[in-house]
Amino acid sequence: MKQTLPFWMIFLLATFACGFSPSGATSAPMPSPQGGLPTPTAETPPVETASPSQVPTEAAADSKAVLYLGIMVHLEGWNDDQDQARFARHVQLMREYASLFETYGARLTWESKEVTDGALKWGDNVLLEMQQRGHGVGVHADIGGQKNYDCSRFAADLRAEKEQLESLGVTVRHVSGIISHCDWVTAAADAGYLFTTGNVAYAVMSMPEENRPPEYRNCPNPAACHDTFPSALADRLHPWRMNSGLDWLTPSPNGRLVLIPSGGGLTHMEEDATGRSPGKNEDLTQADIDYFIQELEQAIALAQPGQVNTYYVSWSLGSPLDPKMLELWLQRIDVYVKAGQVEWRTLPEMYDAYVK
Image (cartoon, rainbow, N blue to C red; front, top):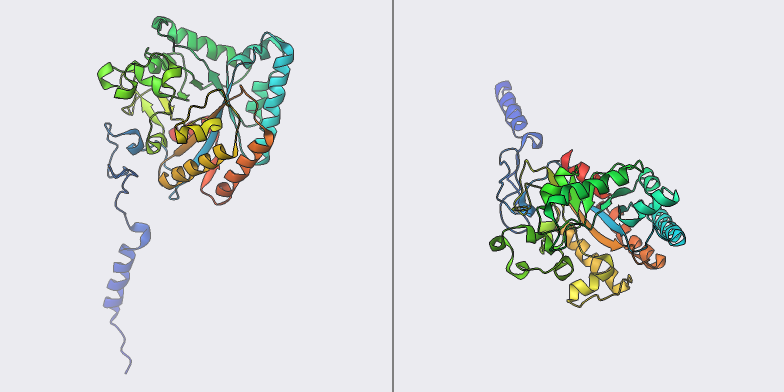
């Protein structure tokens, strides 16, 4: 004979089920890729002494881990304000590369040194055009790296670079090329920048000698200590705020300047991976692309839900790249974009996601 449960028992069972539905469940904090501190949640506030890879970003991504991918292009080496024909060729290449990237839904981040001077002198405002087309634009200062540099000038010199680029109508929020024995963090913040990019190992020279990694304790100049830093990929996948050049490796929730750590150079991915000196070779090769994809896959595997995961590489234009090889690189990346594992972002967009 079929039995019917009493109404009071049905009510209790329904209440019990609702109280433990997935929407009301909480999960334990996820461990970091390095097995260290758990990823902070609302119940586990950030720990200031954690390594950069273990500090929560300020914006919560969705539950799916997505890697924001970018490319930083330094515009230098063409004497743009001295030779109009060379300037015209330089900006022609910029437009061609921008159009190629746009074909794949990708955007570049241009960091200008000499093109700013050329645009002001020759009247072709390619930098404002690039920003209006959705690409990122910032300053590549290349200031402060000389041992005899007067640190008292640092903020004023950086502010002058910012104001010069802003005179073209460009919104300027970030700067690269500021690593120094001086307090480059405070100088950039005082100059009005919100974030910095493209750090290499020489940046530790602003720290007390005893706090520097032994292998970079006495760097003679930026070129001698130009390694990607921090060296561990997991420590370069999340932005963090910095208090000053004295302790910039320790994230500071109230720091005025954000660091978006950099990956390696696109045109010497093979040399970096194998320990060979890149020399003057700035060609993009099949081997460079293969090694890039290997590191990209590692970065995807390390990306964490609930954090803003960032990864970008650099290129100096500088040397033109073979558009066929560049398109092959974009095609290889597009597989991961279509799979939802990677999203193209400019560096300013990465900053926006972090502080949102």
